[in-house]
Image 1 (tube, rainbow, N blue to C red):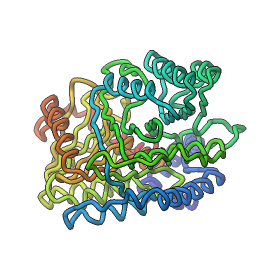
Image 2 (image 1 turned 90 degrees about the vertical axis):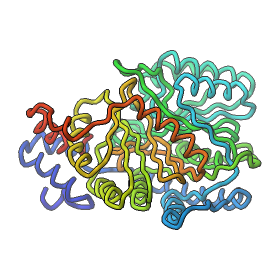
Image 3 (image 1 turned 60 degrees about the horizontal axis):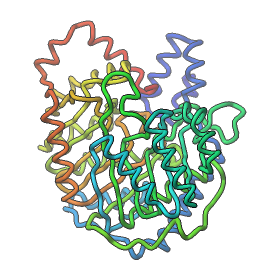
Image 4 (image 1 turned 135 degrees about the vertical axis):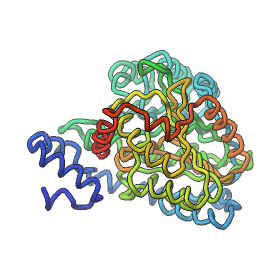
Length: 454
């Protein structure tokens, strides 16, 4: 294992696995066999490469009318090139972007758009619940299908397991195409390692309206305790083409079917002032797109960084970028939920509070609900909103989708939401954190050793 484990992985991850294997040989070997390698079937890697080529081809046809170069200060100008090379997408201008912070309001807007659909509805979600919200969306899809609208739904095989088992058969009987993403099982066609998941939340209606963000199609109280609070984007304009391309690529990964229908990429006129750029990520890209982008954003920030995430278990490069930002005089705020739904992850997350507070980072613990929103704002110029958590799972294992937005007005609108987070949070201080029970400190550090498994 000394020879095998360190191959193509960080020294920190190698040490974690070797420590586990040396201390508990047989359980460690079993866990390593299940989780140790990010195995992606060769067929998926080939399809990812083909999907990237297809994205570039579609952009060559659609893009020239929509390409836009955002006006950014010199310290941020390189972000556009980096994001393009990581995710294949160019920045598209002429978009209108709405921030939807109300959970039920976001679902109702989606339902209204589905009811107005005339050509197709495409949904791609990690969790599609077998509950009242899932059924409301399914009923809207059935109504659309009866009007002759083509409806396709991609659900993660693990995150949406109850709906795939109970709700999907009824949906298929009503002419809705439902596919399970990343099926689990040794004998399943096109199966991957079972903890590689598709964590994206994307919706496209008629190729003209798109949704992206942190919210799944599920009741807000699907996890007992505090209900979820989310942030979604509703997008109209040329950037919807990029959401559509990601959906069709994921559909292609599962079915091998390609679409040439022109209705999926209609001629979209500019309808706003925002410039947006999709940055998908996942094991198929062979790079940690989300991680590299966020770290670079931290290093380029000049004034202020605000990070909102439900899970914060970063690696050393991310932590170093945060510390570097503070040392350069950048104000760094991190908004985390006071209430969590994963105890081990919470313990590992809290193990980082000491060094964050000592570095000068302001930690805000949001109290009203479980804050599941995931976004990052840089100075007054750039916003990154999507599905990526700040942890190794999101960076290396999950398929994620984030949208970069270059628009000072959108940053200002998000700042209003962030100020509400601050007002409803308890700011943690070094003095308060040092007074925690002495037994919790070693437990948190032990949980941190499992960062490669969380």
